[in-house]
Amino acid sequence: MTHISPLRTPAAASFDPRAVKRDFPIFERHPRLVFLDSGASAQKPAVVIDGIAEFYRSDYANIHRGVYHLSARSTELYEAARERARRFLNAGDAAEIVFVRGATEAINLVANSWGASFLAPGDEVVITELEHHANIVPWQLLRDRVGFTLKVAPVDATGGLDLAAFEALLGRRTKLVAVTHLANATGALLPVAAIVRLAHAKGAKVLIDGCQAAPRMPVDVRALDCDFYTFSGHKTYGPTGIGVLYARKAILDTMPPWQGGGDMILNVTFEQTTFQDPPARFEAGTPDISGAIGLAVALDYIDGLGREAILAHEMALTAYGVDRLSRLPGVHIVGAGQQRYAILSLNVDGIHPHDLATILDQHHIAVRAGHHCAQPLVDKIGFGATTRASLGIYNDESDIDALAEAIVAAQKMFKR
Amino acid sequence: MDLRDLYQDIILDHGQHPRNFRKQEQPSHFANGHNPLCGDRVTVYVTLDGDRIRDVSFQGRGCAISQASASLMTEILKGKTLAEAEALFAGFRAKVTGGEAPPTPAPLEDDMERLEPLTGVKSYPARVKCATLAWHAFEAALKNGATGATVKTE
Image (cartoon, rainbow over all chains, first blue to last red; front, side):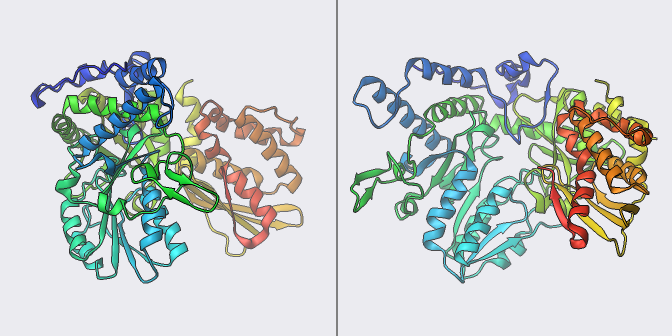
């Protein structure tokens, strides 16, 4: 049996980041660690680490193959993880959940299966300036093969999406809108419900990259009415190598396979092969079984804390961080539109982000420096590079204080 | 390791006030260096007189280490022969990567000494490429002439 700890259901008011932190063994090994890079990848709670180990110890075999007990057990756990992911996104049907390596693979899947089948020269795909490279490059690669037009909706002066400019880009040729839910480089939230409404009014499909949103706010794909939604396991406190693609069933059914192999077929002859229905059609080969099971444990864990409670905690901490850091002379926080979520992207006068990150590292503070895989955006609004502090459920005000103090120390060092 | 070993005064000085920070209008050689990992960019301009470096300058943006390294490099290379420049790069590269340094020819010992403050990066593996970026661009410029080649540090 894989043992999953009982769900904890603290009220928002009782959210205790210090107690949460004790669930993460990395902080036992590195007691002084101030981890402010959860936007790149989150740390793992013991239940996830132990859940994966326990699965390998007790229940492991390949899935969908063996008639023997262990294989049936493994299959059952893997499919239970799919159901868990369905519940996490409030999708209507577990068959709408495809396991992938991560959001990058999910977007490449949509591009290479749906996009290659349904996009044609003259069509238009709309993205935004706030995208991660994973939601830019797959569309450029496909554009170069197919010949459609890729349009980019700009940010406004505050760093949020310019919704009017976005709307102006939509037309009868728009076939797909692919947007991030929450911009990884700046923490700007996109008005995804409005985006879906506007896009659907033109008959376009909508893909949402939920990598940064999924770990910190409730996501309801049916309420959003989006066509595709994706997130990565490793940013939701789960293992690396696993992620989820949600796709509306009516669309998924029309999509051809993008990778061939075992487990995705009904019947194979050398003349012709017939394929499984979704989601198996898109999961060729032995999948990351333990990853899916570890992800399910992680989703139990964060839903046990409650995503409303997580959001409230991180919003309060974000506000504290903005207040604390913007009081420091020479520190500039990059704009995130009307509301900032859990990400503080900043520049310090006279100190390059890489120098700052090295100095912060000496203070045991882990941040990301550079373009955060959002080079076009950071070139435009962040002078080519920023230092990014991204928050997680184990962070509290002391982490922000440590960051502020280390920035002041760096300023002293660089002041000559 | 003490951070002051990495950010010595000489590094901070050259990082904030880089020398020979200018474009040459008609260099005999130039090339771009790009560190895709962190986005640091540098363009190195070289004007040769026979096999001697008559002028070397740079422009770019990046961290203090990359800017200071480029600045120090231009100061040291001006007036050197190509063979001397090659020996200096070989020695410098070995020092910052912790590899085995070839013996420094006696006339270049003072110059190697001047590069010493940059060798603190060897304790910071993620920063070694910052220190070698300008040198790679210099090398690429010599190889490619005035075509404006781009060399990446990966």
